[in-house]
Picture 1 (cartoon, rainbow, N blue to C red):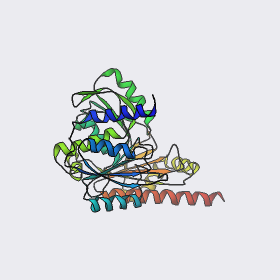
Picture 2: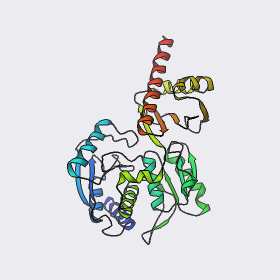
Picture 3: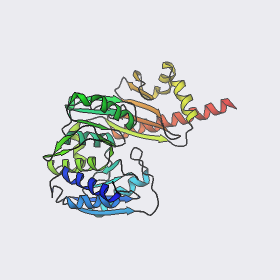
Picture 4: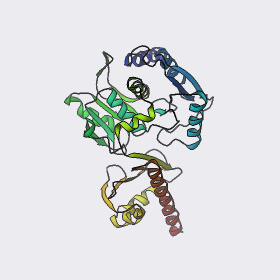
Length: 330
């Protein structure tokens, strides 16, 4: 298939998801940067009735990490929503397989919540998602939930294993990447399975939910009543340093000492990295990146400030451990 044909096919797929004019009355920003979907996303949203303001287009590569958005990017998003009076601002990473969505205040909607909104939009029967996704996404929301290691190959493998069971299968990751594991009916039309990360489906699902419920995006979070999550990373953190830290924390006593400021460790999950649930219910998850010299940390708590503080403190502890370890090697 030629490039033009592929784009036309993808555009038609996006149009089939929503009724014409379904986004009428919405004022949306599209943060274009160096995304390969910069123009197509604007075109699709306008064709569905939205008033669109394109912002931030660049001629050089911009490394947007949808799971660890830097402070400078967040500041831009907040500036744009105020400047242009936006209901939401949407974007993708550079190769356009992961979405980035911010509400009317410029606050980001985490990728796992984007995935949840998509699953609800598609009336999913089963969700497949890594252990790093919000622990509140459970059977209580009406889905069967299967957890995997981090990475789309693991999500795809689990979706394929479930394919014979029937029903609508939706996979997603904490970075916002959504994968459709089965055919489903949307807007009276069949949306065929697409078991690869797709940014337009979750963007349109979230915007459609806003339009149909007539709720601001900031209000939708409250409907799900989930724990608050935060995540960040230590960049340029050698794989050997990650290995030594994880080996050290394999001891329950060492882990308890490392996390002592957060209380008592109640449960440990080693599906991918080290995920500790504290007696308080808070979660701290450390995981070496599989494709970069980085150590990632995820947390869950009752408030955003607490979740962010847990991540910051844990990464500080990891950095201090690595420095001490290096000194001992001298």
